[in-house]
Amino acid sequence: MTDLTGAPVPVDVLHTLFRSEQGGHEQVVLCQDRASGLKAVIALHSTALGPGLGGTRFYPYASEAEAVADALNLSRGMSYKNAMAGLDHGGGKAVIIGDPETLKSEELLLAYGRFVDSLGGRYVTACDVGTYVADMDVVARETRWATGRSPENGGAGDSSVLTAYGVFQGMRASAQHLWGEPSLRGRRVGIAGVGKVGHHLVDHLIEDGAEVVITDVREESVRRIRDKHPQVTAVADTDTLIRSEGLDVYAPCALGGALNDGSVPALTATVVCGAANNQLAHPGVEKDLADRGILYAPDYVVNAGGVIQVADELHGFDFDRCKAKASKIFDTTLAIFARAKEDGIPPAAAADRIAEQRMADARRS
Image (cartoon, rainbow, N blue to C red; front, top):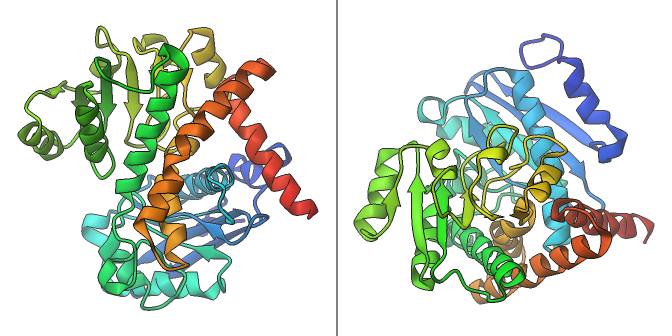
């Protein structure tokens, strides 16, 4: 297997693709359209529960091999997310390689839509980092398998609204489990990343009576929050945030890998619950958190509100129906904590067991 430049893909990527202990991946498609500059990877991890569903990430990866690896990791995460959300969808994900600020064009998005369509419904796409509702409207001109479209074009609109709502439900469940009350009132919550999802999460927390501390690499994102909620405190960076005195909850809401060998020992919070995908930098981090007495709400469980929304779009979108489904993230998170206690394992491992069982049952049926 070679990457999009024709160079050999490193062995570790091939190992990830065929790694039996993680279930393997059913299909990986490398897509290229020279006229528009499109270079993309579509990865299908599992279709045991139904067509793979997951967003399209548009990001300036350092290498094509890095993009392939990200697509593999993200698509696997979507299998587990969709299973835990109770959806009849498997896991898929796509990445487009390049800076969306300079490379994104109508021609490129249309070319990408044709590649999605060529899979005949095995993969259903939506928005992710670097792609937006307007982009999905363009992609949908070439395929019916694009969700996250605008209401004007028959879609559900911005899925970050319910993503944030689901994360908030996960926080409420964490508070119930740890402190005996499903509220963040009087708790200090630190949010790293207040972009598409994070700024909605701030609204929920302020309404609930929490004290909120934020950081973001984009000054305009911080300024938007501070203009709306002057009582919110901003700090310089994530490293400062995780070390903030008196922090009860840490919410990683930017890119993945936030929980690693450097950040976990420095955390002052007793709960981690955020919107970012793939927060655990490597296997074993979940045990490090548990050993420090830090309650971890598995990312793919609590951030499933968005995928619940875009999945509903395929059947005629109804916001109230979606919000009711996203509200169940509260109960699902509590059930994971209970299973973790019962089995004597970290919550991330408990969530994996539940998701894997649902996928295994689907394969046998």
